[in-house]
Structure formats: C-alpha cells, structure tokens
Length: 181
Ligand code: SF4
Ligand code: SF4
Image (cartoon, helix red, strand yellow):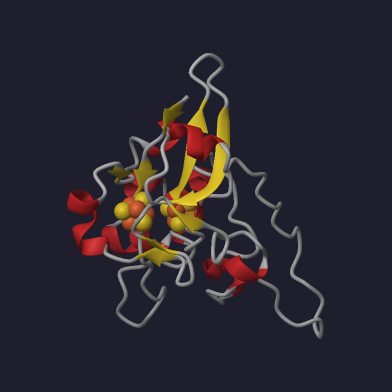
C-alpha cells in the first residue's frame, strides 16, 4: 500500500457580505475554473476529511480511509493548525485546483469541490445551504474529534487504523433533539 497525499485546508470567508466578490449561489452558476478566489475559498465546508490519511491498495487501486490525520490537523478545531506554513511542515499537502480536483480520487465523495466538479448539488449541511458552519459537524459529515495524530506511524501502523467513517445524516435532525457531534 502507498500513502496518499493530503490536501489544502481552506478557510471560507463569509459569503454574500455587502461588497463581497462572492456571487449569490456561485456554486450553482459557476464551474470551479470560473470561480474567483473568494468564491473558491468559500466553497470549502470545513469537513476536514481531506486532512485524514487514506491508503491505496497498489494492486487494485482501492482506497482505505483511516482515522489518522495529518500531523498539522487540529482535531478539535477541525482545521489546519499552521495553514501559512503547511507546505514546509507537511510537504504531502496538496493544494486543490480546478484542474486536479477531478483527478483526486481520495477526496471524500462529500467534498464540495468534488461535488461541484461533478455537477452535483451541495448537501444540506454545507453552510452555504444551511447558513450555519456547525451543520457539517451536526450532520456527522466532518472529521472533528474523530481522528488521532499521525505521529510516527508508518504504513503497517496506518493499516491497523483503517476505519469505516460514519455516513452523514440524510436530513437535518428534528428540532428539539439537540446537536450531535
Ligand atoms: S474535503 Fe473538501 S470540503 Fe472538506 S475540508 Fe477538504 S477541501 Fe474542504
Ligand atoms: S498541512 Fe495537513 S492539516 Fe494542513 S491543510 Fe494540509 S493536510 Fe490539512
């Protein structure tokens, strides 16, 4: 098995603010290549799953997801702890681009960039849909508090950490049940 690369963690900016460069419903009207920088950054749902290590079977190409995250991933904050210096500290980190998104099979199927690239709609939990950045966690669609750090683990150790990630909720939980992590 080979260790797959990790990718860029993008911090979204508030969408549709007065004077914003972010067009309303840009994710429905623009392709990835047509988005400006602000829109591109706003597309990330903050799930953090792209910072979790996957293993690929060299013979079959099958991907196995682990519960081990990049050493820079802050599990509680669900984000990169040193975004500005990630390239020097985590050389495997891959920056997403309109060109490489369709080729990165290790992106989670729920990734907003992948969805837009495939001409699909964002899920209900995306904050651009729900208006709430907590929705991705509420839907069980994020890596928040679900990973352990990479540490010194090599391939054999990573193979023992292969897990089945939970399926996100299909619909928002009924009101009154409280929020779940
Ligand atoms: S998987 Fe996609 S949507 Fe989720 S944090 Fe990574 S880039 Fe953002
Ligand atoms: S350096 Fe690691 S934690 Fe930071 S964005 Fe890249 S993969 Fe994610």
